[in-house]
Image (cartoon, rainbow, N blue to C red; front, top):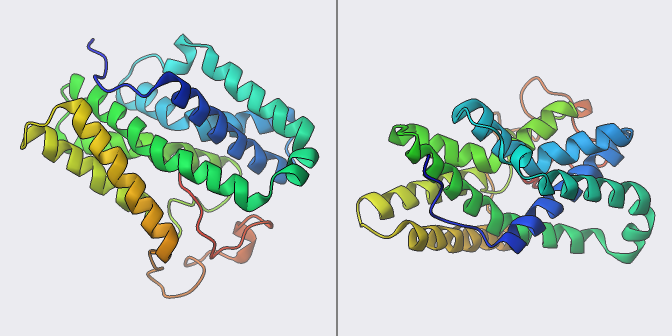
Length: 239
């Protein structure tokens, strides 16, 4: 089976995996999970999108099982957060950590979405399916994390344009490679840059989706559905 043509630099891939795992581990700690629980949430946050892509849609062995370094990174992130939550909180301000994760997310999400789309094209999946798998690759981790911790998934809540922006740049990638004959690698870097710009502008100008019902909470969902440490109106990143 052909592999994806576009490659994320390996150091960035490892850094993104570690950052997403740490952000998931923080959620597990806030939920007062034990060590196993924190590890599972870190795993879902960092590798959930690839797991859904490989195991369900492409029906192949998930990459993190073939390359154990990813499990090692998730385990390291778990131990780091569990043992040093207090010192890290005092050393790094919460907004500093959030900004760092946002930057990694803004670069990593479209990059891994491209890889998902290229693998889907290798499997001769129709265009709509390729687009769907690209978006899933970028958002399924956060969806799985939220479902497991019994939160309303951030993907479903009003918030900044993340999933919609990802859908837009995935469609742009297919347009560039199929209609404009741009090479897959060049098209990939174009959409990574495009998503990053959209993400920065969305944060700067607080571009957000709005609830259909017009209220601050989803229909038939009470305030207990949200994490006690979260503001329901605060933008949350779907992974």
